[in-house]
Amino acid sequence: RRRALCPPRATFVRGFTDKMATPEKLSAEAIEAMGKKELLEALHAIAPLAFLQEKKLAGNVANVAKKAKKEDVTKAYEDLFKAGTFASKEQIEQEALEASMKKAAIAEEKEKEKAAAAAAAAAAGSGPADDGPKKFQRICNKNGNKQNYPKKGDKVKVYYTGKLEDGTIFDSNQDSEWCKANKRKPQPLVFKVGSGQVIRGWDEALLEMSVGEHATLNIEADWAYGKKGMPAAGIPANANLVFEVELAALVN
Image (cartoon, rainbow, N blue to C red; front, side, top):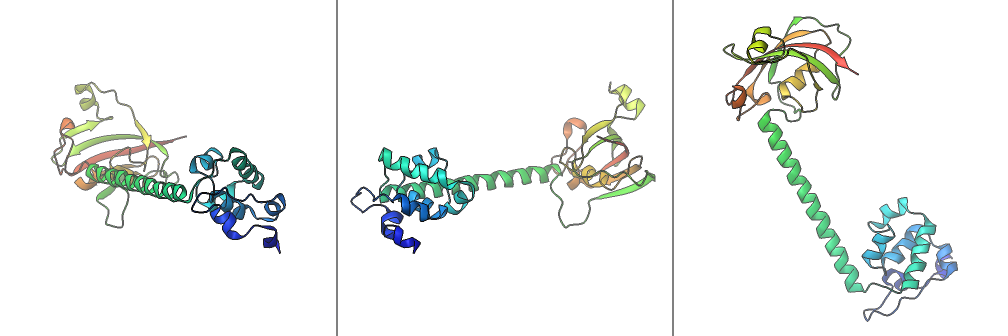
């Protein structure tokens, strides 16, 4: 019965003829009887993309219908007929094609960025966890409190000394002699654990430690600085590293 109040479907779904005739306007009674999604379909069939964007009604009809209010759709429909700027069939098809191509290009660009970020993380040894075996060994030298374990994203305070496998120290914030020789002030390193701010071996191992624990971390190159190493710090390519680490505190 509701359909009887509306013009034939061809009138509002297409809204025009191939010769670009002015579409027949729906009556107030027909608009009142129509559902919001159905009215949106009628509007999309005759409105230029620029008009829909201006009214914040562009996009997939089902998705737009979830957010838009029917009174806003109704007002946009009335405004379109006042302006008289209707879209031709060819224009709507062209705009739909362009929008689809733009969406595909954006998706492709995001995939490229995601792949590049993953490759960079893998090269640095700090990529996301996978199902493979751990590439570090944690040896507990002093137990922590067994209560306060960091979660991903928590800020932690850490004291450490980093060594090559031959025992050469390349970095420390706790070895007094090394800090003095390198004019470094002994102070804890503060960072968000599990978020890629440090090498992956640290991110993974510290999540297993409780506050107060002292541990030796033997980290394979893939979860340290990888194929590139860090020459400026004296870390060669493909170097396995050893860290003496103390999880001093969690930072609120």
